Amino acid sequence: MGFVSILLFALGCVHCSITCCSSAEVNKHFFPPGFKIGVANAAPQIEGAWNEDGKGETIWDRYAISQPDTIYDHSSPQVASDSYHKWREDLEMVKEMGVDHYRLSIAWARIYPDGYKTDKPNERGVAYYKNLLRSLRALNIEPMVTLYHWDLPQKLQDDFGGWLSPKIVDIFADYARTCFELFGDEVKWWTTINEPKQICELGYGSGVFPPAINLPGVGNYQCAKNVLLAHAKAYHIYDKEFRQKNQGKVSIVIDTIWFEPNTTKPVDIEASERALQFSFGLYGNPVFNGDWPAVVKARVAQRSKQAGLKKSRLPTLSPEEIALINGTHDFLCINHYASHMVSALSDEPPFTDTSFDADIGVNDSIPSEWPKGGEAWFAVWPPGMRKLLVWLKNTYNNPEIVITENGFSDNAGTLEDDHRINYYRDYVSNCLDAIYIDNVNLTGYTAWSILDDWEWRVGYHSLIGMYKVDFNDPNRARTPRKSAGYFTQVAKNRCLVDPKDCVH
Image (tube, rainbow, N blue to C red; front, top):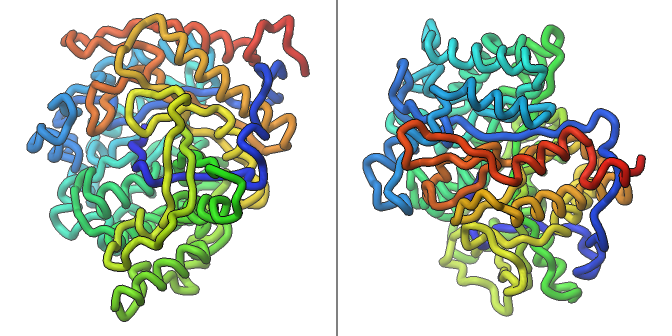
């Protein structure tokens, strides 16, 4: 799950009132024919075995182990959920839930320990993923594989600055080609990079995530350009070299929270749209429409000029780069968890403030009556899911959409997690409303997470699994929560209510 900056947002259905897209009751439709239901997690959050079988050090390994005070509970991903050793047990859990697909990530540093392509990938790392992927196929579960879920090999950061350097583009492309070669027969759904906004803004802008580079309003935009070019090169490699044989699909995963305009005033609606174009559109627009969003280019250029800079802090995309990036998607992937309210600021932030938030220039808040999850930003408002899907449909020309993450975190970890059941029911209900009422081309839903994991800077304080993991137990025992039973019935019945009450 992505850690979301408080002042980042998304908006949709901009001319509606706050209640326009809410459902009076749970949607009773069966899921459409062919609709895919799955569960997910990622290598750095569940695998552990951080230095076993030839795996190299990642930026998260270095950060958590060397600076334990930066992690809420002083934990690290050294063991996490120990899925590297317990993957067979975890796949049995996935099978028992009756889902169609399992989203996972490949740890770059298990394939190439230093990140660089060598003559031969790490055999033990390759064997681990081959066994995992082939076992999923044998269970009739479709793997959805992410190539990069934040775990940059540390040496790439040490040698040239990681995602700040154009060098990363071809190095990532080499790694992607290797994965397509090694695992292409088992994988039909590929996603290149997970949540680039978090990689770039938190890692190279505000610096609150590793590699903890504090270059606000500069590093984040340079990172964004390199991430998009790396994704695009990987996409074209698959398209030209592997698609005909493997018949798979490739995209990038972009995350956003939903920010509802605080009022129906034009200034609040405009502020919301502007913020959306910064947070989602910064990555989505080059891929789906070509080039940076116009409002992003204009605002960063203006604020750069007012600050006395000779050129915009936002790097230019050349015509060749625009052409390379534009259209590099076979479907749209969205990670979504929470909603906020957003309004216009009364005054423009100081031009000397070069932060991403100042460039957006909006105010956000969370209504006190909205339920909260396990972190401060996690505010639950299910209509936000439907509004987001409608906005994506309208903004990106009605693409096929797959929800690649959605789920609820808490700090208690109780087995009787009715609050999580209610979350899934209400968010999926809004997905069905988007399909059947708004004609959104939504073809898949992926719940995060199948089991508790290591949640980045909050460690084991935020619990989000349908299976509880006992992190005090060396064996990392798994126990199903009530939500696991609920989601299993949803997956098997293909409906949110009793099947006898469902309609086609």
